[in-house]
Picture 1 (cartoon, one colour):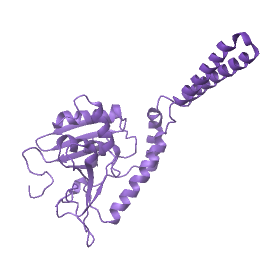
Picture 2 (cartoon, one colour; picture 1 turned 90 degrees about the horizontal axis):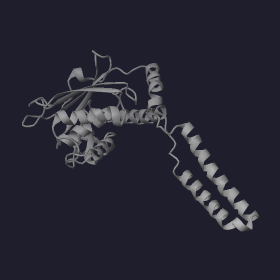
Picture 3 (cartoon, one colour; picture 1 turned 135 degrees about the horizontal axis):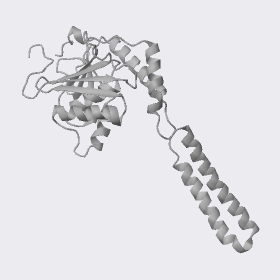
Picture 4 (cartoon, helix red, strand yellow; picture 1 turned 180 degrees about the vertical axis):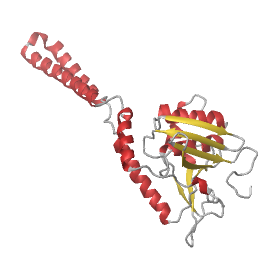
Length: 288
């Protein structure tokens, strides 16, 4: 049975809406893809240019019988080039502010659901199908489960523990990261933490900086993060926290509990992930 986390792991204070708006504005530009509005205009101009070339060559072929074959061929090339240029045009971008609002809504709904069913403060990311990122579940134990509630044994929970079992936001990002690594995810905590924090900053750009501190013997990873792209990382299943915890759960093949505190040193956030160390007892078990 999973117990509630210590008092010092309570949810941190939320930032004000003014601070959040400022963070979103500052992060909006870096999160835009390189194919911005100006690039779209240039791409549209290329499409129009090829189409005009094809049309002019076709008209000229009708007016000049001697060169009709060549001009019609040029018209065909222009038409095909216009179609290809249009089909290869980059997808429209989604601004960071819009993505943040979508996540905010989902996180708020899930947090309200957890509160409604009397969920605890525990956030356990449990692998239920070996080292497959798609098999990780976010398990939230219930403090006072309703009558008839079924446990989630075999789905990331203890046999006598009724709980919510959800698909975490970070699982697809861990799967993408695993595919991009030549040797896959590491299985030792220090190297794995380095892979995950590097991906948060440079690959996914969820945060501007992530400084990891690993204590493998105690089964603990602490990561100081700054400038989170999706707002304060204490929100429910935040992408940065979820990716860290899911990655650890996959690489270490054991459940990982995640909490977020205010980092008094830097003024940012401190994400703490705990797991049962190799050859030890469960770090979250009060009787261990």
